[in-house]
Amino acid sequence: MRSAVCLLVVTLLAAPAAAQFAEVGSLDFSTSARSAEAQRHFLRGVAILHSFGWKQAIEQFQAAQAIEPDFALAYWGETLSYNHPLFGGGPNLDEENPRAVLARLGPTPAARAAKAPTDREKGFLEAVEVLWGEDGTYDERRVGYMEAMGRLYDRYPDDHEVATFYALSMLAGSRALGDQSLRLEVRAGNIAMKVFQQNPDHPGAPHYTIHAFDDPIHAPLALDAARRYAEIAPAVSHARHMPTHIFIQHGMWELVSNHNQSAHDAAIALWEPGDSVGDAVHSLDWGQYGDLQRGDYDKARVWIERLERLVADSDGQARAVGTLPLVNARYVVETEQWRVEPITDDSSLHELLATGLSAVRTGDLATARAAEAALASRAADGGAQDRIAHKEVAASIEAAEGNADAAVALMDEALAIVETLRLPNGAASPVKPPYELYGEILLQLDRPGDALDKFETSLLRMPNRMRSLLGAARAAAAVGDRAAAREHYATLADFWIGAADDPGYAEAREFISATNEN
Image 1 (cartoon, one colour):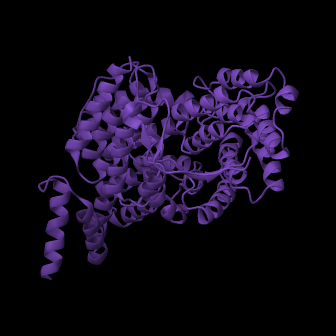
Image 2 (cartoon, one colour):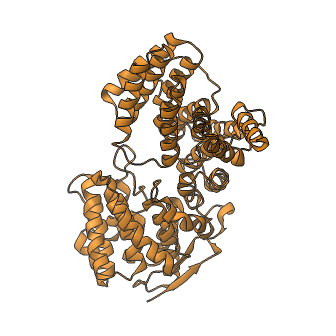
Image 3 (cartoon, one colour):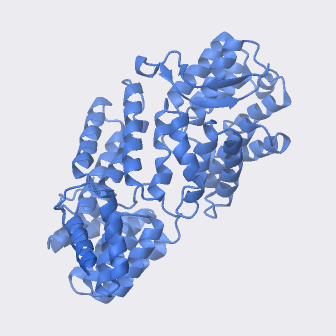
């Protein structure tokens, strides 16, 4: 049976009342389903799966299975609904449920394949047999899954569902391989964009285009997809959030704030006790970042209060608990409302960085050194972010003590680590971007020309960051480039909605006014 369905304003069966009428996009996915009703549930499930609406997708696939117990692709879809495809293994990896789903379809791969009548359906099923098989590590199986989807794409290059799921498998495969060349992302984005051009209502095509081009170099290629995606599938929280990956790359702070508020609302409306709080926390995290950049510090505090409630309502889910120190530390660093917190064995990376910088800025160098020592301990066995944060605090201490060469050397070491990493995406990590901090330290050391270079690089990597704009304006003014200073101040003033007496905003207004008079 070939079936095309437009899933606009559909009723999601078994969904909470708040999400009964929802939009999830449109797609054409032919199958061998014998039941039209099972096919409709399947299509809804696939459309929602493309937007990573795991709970909603599972409901639809299971509804299709209940109607038609041997409908192989309904089980295929459910296996892909238990794990985020772009995250690796670790404690949250769920292999048990996908394998149990396959076992419900049939006891062996051969028995399951027998229930997939066409070569194309067998290809989809064979790919997830690799992904959820017993051989190799999860990352090795993710690469094997990508290769299986590639073989299927070679046979069916014009099939939108083969194409989009292959594009997603490449995004996952790139991460599994640790490939930072972006070659797989660019290929995935090219395939997804072709589908988007042919079906601008397809939920997966713009979604995977956004993921593929989520870096400061390629982000302009995904701006049309980002603007369209939230309109395609507003039933799914992640679809409302996802455009902000590209809006952040352009420094579009109002859109970052508003879309994440919308995504958070959708996640809370769907959430029930026992569900994951992942979508609610993720949109909250990014929404706070956007509001901090445009100076809405009151709203940034509201996000923290919401997270505190989520921690309580979810009985302390790890995702919520682990994000709370981050949003608190980010608030301190972005607002420069410096706060020195006690240092304990449980202090997180973000807390140590915020406390270390706060202590330096408030002249409490003893506490700053304690934070630096704690970060050094983490850096000895930790990853790149731990090492960067340690060098940031250590360099800030050296600059405060007048040891310019030592401060510069430490920040050079921090940047050397940064340059080994993928280009930035999302909210700043660490919470104080190294190029931005380096610029501030160079200004402190009366080297405005060098500082301007660092701020400009920071803005290329993370456009329209408020502190980088402010630093670039100050550095440009210090070297006598009033036109550049005015441009940076004006950009800040254009998106600022915070308090009129904020020192940075007041400084920008005064400079703009003075240059207008001249």
